[in-house]
Image (cartoon, rainbow, N blue to C red):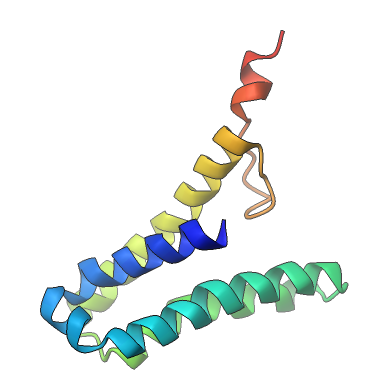
Length: 122
């Protein structure tokens, strides 16, 4: 799930930043992508396993997702708005795909998506 989320996030940044800015800022793209996706998902997963309160392990990665790219890439208002809309849509989309096809409901447990096996089971 981390790998799929990382690919999706990099493509989202490519779409929002444009080809030239994306290529020019590849090191920043890699650093922000790793921080937001990999570190954020690991923090959320291990925060839950270590018994941290949900208001720590869930909102901190979400805040990094919301704030870090617009600040690091100094996005204009339109770019920030596009990024925020796409970022808000991408998390439920990844959750729905993994929940439906693989039965993994951990990413957004409050958003119940039945798996293909649950639907087709007799």
